[in-house]
Image 1 (cartoon, rainbow, N blue to C red):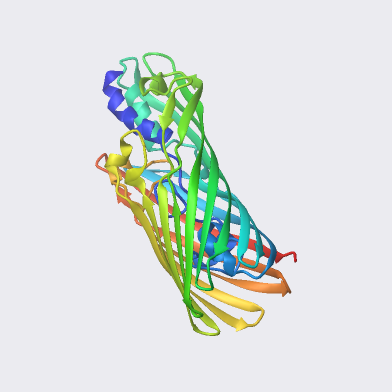
Image 2: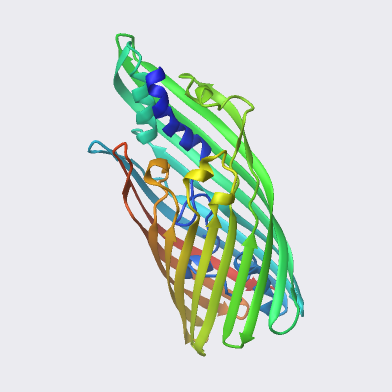
Length: 407
C-alpha cells in the first residue's frame, strides 16, 4: 500500500484540522450572537450583552443593571468536492447557540459567555468525497482490488467556549477589561470505503475521536474620545490544544500509518486574535461601524502546518438606522481572507475566501427586552488544487436572539 500513502496525507488533514463554519480564520470563527449575524461587525459595539465577547471593555458603556442575552443560529451548509466531473456533496445544517451575561454597576462590570469559538458542526458525505477517494485509490494500489464500490464519510467538530472576566472605567473616555476563556474541543470522524476485485468486496472503516482543552487570556480597551465616536480593541491569546486520539476502528491501518494511534496527541492551537472596531454616529438615527479581526495563524503551534499558511482576517462595514424609537434596521458586509493555499484546503469543509452579506432588525418588545432577527449569505470563492479537486460551498443563515435587562 506504499503507493497510496501520499494520498493518505490528504486524509491526515481531515483528521487534524477543525472545521470552521462561516468565513473567517482557518480555525477561528466569530458568529457568536444574533446581533453579529445581522451586522457582521461588533468589535466597537456597546448596545447589548454580546459585547462581552466582541468588545469586552465596551461593556462598561451599558446602563447599570444585569443583562441576559441568548441567541440561536440556523446555518445551511452546502459543501462540495468536484473530482473528474463528479461532485460529492454534504448538506447537513448546523444550529449554533450563544449565551451572554453581564452585570454593570457604575465603573465596574462583570461578565460570562458561552460560545462556539471553533468547529463547524457536522458534515455527511453519503457518496464520499475527496478524502475517501484518496483512501480508496490507496487501497486500489493493492493487486487484489480494482473497483471502488462505495464510500461514505461523517465528521463533526465542535469547540465549546466559556468566557468570564471584568471591565473597569478608568475615566469617561477609557475603559479596560481582562478575562479568560476555557475551551473544550471535540472531533469525531467515521469514514468507510468498500472495494472489490480478485478478492471479495471488503469494507474498510476508520473511526475515532479527538479531544482537547485549554485556556486563553483576553484583554480589551474601549476609547470614546467624543460622544459620537467609539473605538473597541480586543486581543485574545492563542489557546494551546493537545488533541488526544481515541481510535474506535482502523481496518486499513491508514490512521496508524499517519500516527493517529490510541492515546497519541496532536497539537492544534486555536490561534490568537486581534480585534479592532470603530463606531461613529453620523446623526442620532444613523450609526456606522467598521471592524477588522486578524487571526495570527502563523504564531499557533500546528505541528509545523502553520508554516504553510498566512495570517487571515475579516474586514467589514455595517450601517444601523433607527426607523422608530423601538425599531432599528441594519445592513452588514464582511470580506474574509482565510490565508490557506488550495493544496492544503480541508475537503470536508473547504476554507475559502468569502464575501458575506447580512441584514436584520432589532425590535424593543417592551422596556428592557430587545428582539434581534438576522439573515444573510456567505458567497465563497471557488478554489481548485493541483490534484484537480474543485472546492466550493454555500452558507445561508438565519438568527434570532433576545437581550433582556432584568434590573
